[in-house]
Length: 189
Image (tube, rainbow, N blue to C red; front, side, top):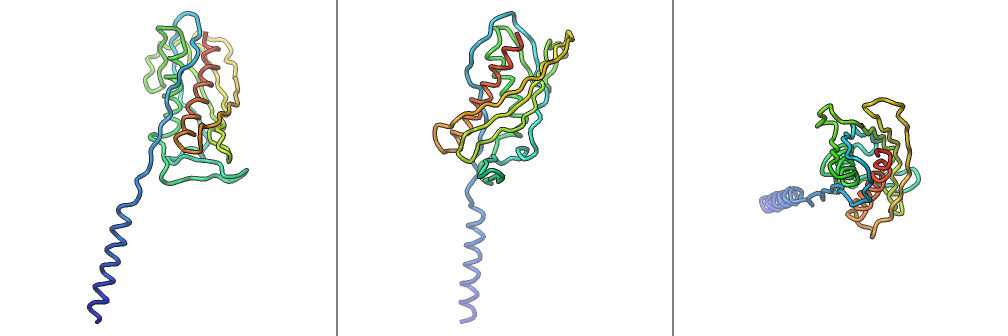
């Protein structure tokens, strides 16, 4: 009788261990470039400097607000790369899509030193409210190689996702970043 109880216990523990090994794989998301209005003028060269994001967003998991002062994090819904790097890369692509043909926008990791302008971006908030509405609050400064005083601009952009899914929220975040690129591109002419 003792042997069968041990065998049953061993089988139960082995089954539990096997179940733990086959847990749900995480879903991984990325921001994407969105179409925008092209601005006129001559081609420009620019770089997007490192992007500053709040520490609460500096994590692999996607952060959502679940109340006025509470943040929610799901271990299985993750970014494909650090959020600051992703915002920098996608913003550079968004700007390239909006600037005159022949313009070149790079990230600070690919600087040639010949860029005429540099965009510095500080994100104050970039996450969905408890109702799912994505909020992007950001400040940016455009530095020109030729000198002159750099003016700081601010924006608060909101986007309502198409549905309650994380994929729709990430798409709304991409749209908000695209609108920010529209505003930045206007100042780069």
